[in-house]
Structure formats: structure tokens, C-alpha cells
Image (tube, rainbow, N blue to C red; front, top):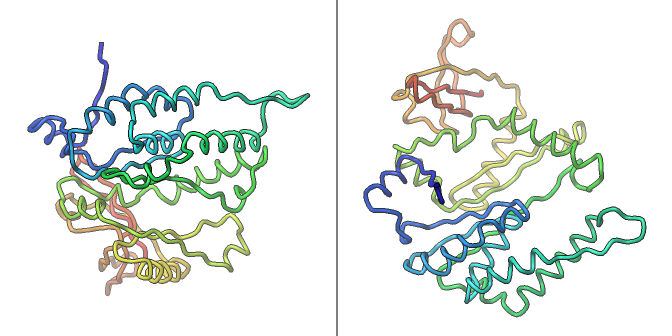
Length: 296
């Protein structure tokens, strides 16, 4: 029976095959949301943070959401083995008293009691979490916008459905799909520090309250990110044409999301050529091809 399965990309797999799975090779550990399902990883958490990872002196970024954030924050405490055992104990023994006539606790009740439990769990220990010698904690959260700004029985599922459809239509080709692991520049790009900003067209939001904001990631500083986001917002709200075409993989090796290319296509009334921005790169490994999407 398999006790543990490892999933790795080509570079990570070659590294493990050559050197083994070493703690000093780990620089980031994610902790996913999932409520009580996160407790399944308790024994593994105790081993990783209480034993295995202590063999490294490297700085490690711990990234978590929901129960994953609680797990990663607990890993930063002075005695993580004892702390993880306490986390499991406290989580399992949460109890919510129902008011007369209620079948389940309200969201407000759950949030209030859970917040009290978190405060009690980390009482006096916040410096341990924030000042760990090697671990850097990153907590992922989300803010509801427009229809998701308020939680109601019908608004929440409709809002999430809208977000799902929006992601499916608008983000099918993002930065990650354009990253090929044999290109060290793209690997370095994703591993660098970045700034994420948002730009909005208030006129458009007035006409369409559910319209999405434009998000932009910049490697330099916040001011540059805002400036680029504003330029892109003006660009995307103009009269644009969008095309897609297939090229060989080696032809697209130097293309990135945001690259400027000159497209010449007489049948599209582009005989003299026109500059376009690359907005999508989808690789088909088996065929050795890349579908390039451009906007301009």
C-alpha cells in the first residue's frame, strides 16, 4: 500500500532523482483551505515541521488560506509538534450552541466563536509567529466585490457561479500557462518578488456592476504596477481586435504574456502590419505547437 504519493514537475523530478528529497531544497510550503479536511495532514505536519525541516537552515515561505493559514501559523510556534496536536484538539472540540428554533448556527455565530478560539489559541504567541528565525508567513484571503459584497442565501451561490464563469472565459490563458519549465527566465520571473494591483473603469462599473477589475502583476514597485495597470486599462477599453493562431513551439520560445508582435495578414486587412499584444499562450506538448492569442 502506498503511504505517500509525490507529484513533481520535470525540473523538481530531476532534482529529486539526482539528490533525493532534501529539506534544504524547500523554499515554499502551501496550505490549502478545506476546513476539517486539513486535519488529515496533522501527522505529516508534525513530522515535516517538528523533524524533517529542522535539518535545513534555508528561509521558507509558508502560504496558507483558511485552515491552511492556521496550520502554517502553527508551524511558526516554538514547539510545532505540541502546537499541532493542540490545534487538532481545539478544532475537533469546537461546539456551537443553537438558539431555539435553529437547525444550524448562523455564519455570524460561527465567525464570532471561531475568532474567539483563534485569539485564545495564539494568545501571547503572536511574536513567535511573526518573528520566526526561518519561516515567513503569508495568509491568503479574498474580499467579496459587487454581488459578493454581502452574504445572503441567493447572492453567494450566484456570485460564485459568476466568478467561475468569468475565470473560465477571461483567464483561460494566464501567466502560468505561458511558463515552460525549460526556460530559466520564466522560472526566475515567477520566483521573483511582485506587486499586484487593480484598476477599475468607474463608467463601465456604473453600466455593468458585475464587470471585473483589471489586475496586473509587476516585478518592480507599486507605483510602476499602478502606472502599467492604468495604461492597460485604457488599452483594453479601446476598440480592439483579437486573433489567435498556431505556431511551432520553437518559434514561440521568446514570447511572453505582454510581448509586442507585428502581425501581417492581408486577408484580415493587415497587409501593412499592425502591432498586437500577446495575451494568451497555450502549449500543446504532444504536437509541438503553441496557440498564440493577440489583442490590438
